[in-house]
Image 1 (cartoon, rainbow over the protein chains, first blue to last red):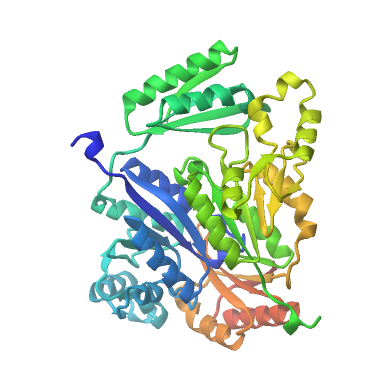
Image 2: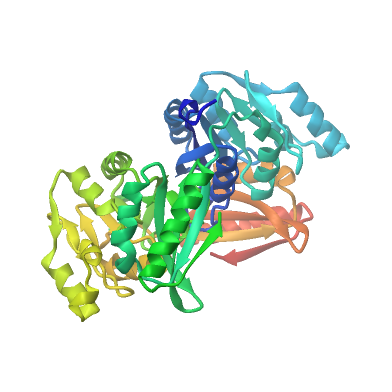
Length: 254
Length: 254
């Protein structure tokens, strides 16, 4: 397939949870999923963080599943009263929800003693009708897929296990590659030649991220695109420009 | 003012930046703003992470500024070609954009030598017409407010400085207070009495967040609400329930 024929495959991550919106918990799932998805050619184009409110969850899922190729939700599929995501997904798709025999079987095996397989834990076997299970190698209780919407747990280690167990199902486009050029020249000095480079290299996306390293200004210039040769050529052109301006510049892979 | 008369004041945080969507950078501004806003009675009800695309930024800002009392955007107001947020805000509000005299004056003073106040840096003085400046005690280049939309930089330390310099302008509702009860009982065991407590304490929002401490299961039960007395009473009721079940339980402030 030629580059031109390959399409861009997009995704949206929906983080469900009052604990993120209150600031109590820092989300870690967006960065993980974005990185992993990018590596297989699926571009995260938007993320939303929304509260544990049924109408909001259902409306958000319905909006974004129509806009993006894939949707990943995290959070809200545990055993407690605030775990309402599975019901909201069923509502969004207009389907029923009940215990999934395979999910019940897995949890029954996992808990062993029937007394431990409490009514609350049985809630984790409730899956929207028509959904396919997503394996949970970490703690058994499955996630699930409804059409293009994958529903994962919220705990980062469980999200990682679920994603790794299902990622072979995804059809990505061209993986997005990147090169980073780091310089000690401040943004205000390099902005003009950098903007000109972006115009000459329209197929690439060039971002400028200022920061500090060892107490000194350090700007990371990140070139992103799908053509490794173009990226290498643009990165060395950029290093040359920065050095000609009297700056330090080093190109890093990725 | 009585409790019943006070209204809930809401906010949305819009994080603008390809670097977050690529997974390269972990956002830190959502947790900071959510915590600070919660403390002054402004509840973050939604966050969005969106790319550096003009149409997306303008449409998102227009959608959320109609839905929430306050909107805070972070990212994209620096001197480089990928800093397009100010133009997008002007577009969203249907106003022009040009150099703001006070912003020019501040940056002129800051850079001193006119040769350092480059054309790129002058871009940071471009402010949508009708906007009020937000001070930047960290690096001078200001943020701004258009109606209920505050536009901040992306670097966390600058966001913190901008927020602290303008937060007195915000009118919050009742601050959301919280109590945390930590227990060694697993969620599947406590789910039922916890759900019953939530039903009896409908004015509170009770969340259950499982995790690990020193290699053992540890569940944080977070009670949130606006009435300190009700929170204290519910937290001690919950501690009693957990201890009666044979678990360890300790109530923590906040």
